[in-house]
Length: 243
Image (cartoon, rainbow, N blue to C red; front, side):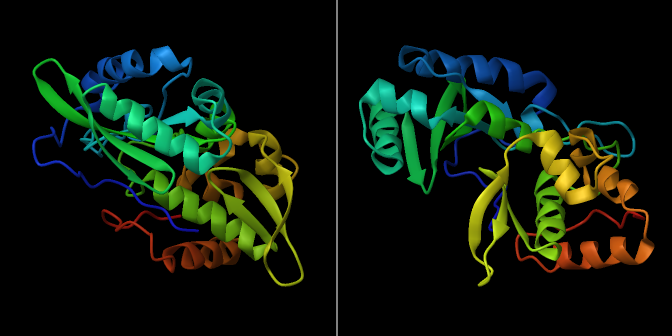
């Protein structure tokens, strides 16, 4: 599982902005360009759930991450598959006068707000409304962890139980060769039960801290954290939380 966060493509976009002030109006600005397609801009990440440091100050954001529903865009563009749909979105946004850069499932877009520009990353995925829940975190104030860290902890939990976690699809079983097999669930509460036991709910998957709090065995907690930290997408911790 590869995860990326942050990084701006254009030198003239605003970085280090307050997501509590910019997130909502920037989402509205982006939505104006998407409205004709009949799709909703589903904000995720720090612009949806801002992070706060130990002093209660909001942690700045460098871009706005959002999901767009693949099936809705396919109908709008009359495209046959995901690849051509993402290309059609890229072409459409360029025709609206926006600068874009398409990479993988994401169309990075330079979106105006007032007299400034911000980077909005449109990720085109199936079942976007459901998948958005996978990327909306509940990170405690002062946590050293980001959303990407939580995803890697979930991946470690899944891998340790011969399952596979896809942040864009849901929880899968693995076949005898360790490859992705059938989808076990894309329901948030059910995923929590698979990973953390029958008493778990989706709320327990809100952060690294809430996941660790649900794991009673200290040795098991250490095992999962070590697996997660070994992932090359792990984000450097600010200090070290006791989990």
